[in-house]
Length: 105
Image 1 (tube, rainbow, N blue to C red):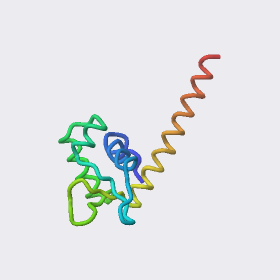
Image 2: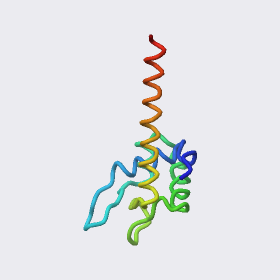
Image 3: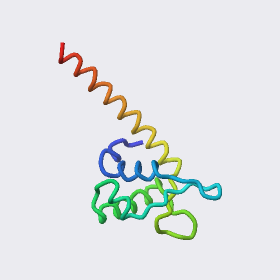
Image 4: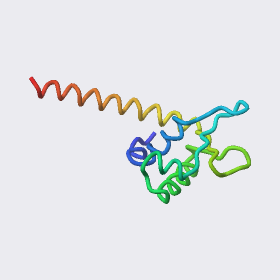
């Protein structure tokens, strides 16, 4: 996985979807409009639209069911990417804390 791909707003959008998934009839969806994602993340609506198209084209999200609006499913590829980014985030946070402690001595 290319972590560099997610060092920007793509991760915010994907994470927003991941945190707001619900299960309906055995299927898991992120029932969010692009406008809601923009409002939650603070990313411009047009940018969210572009990111969602990019995530879909790269296999990170899929449109669920017949509707193509506001009903997204995260692929296994997306779940793995989120997991890897969380590990990286925790590692960087730990490095920062350790460096801060060393600096304060």
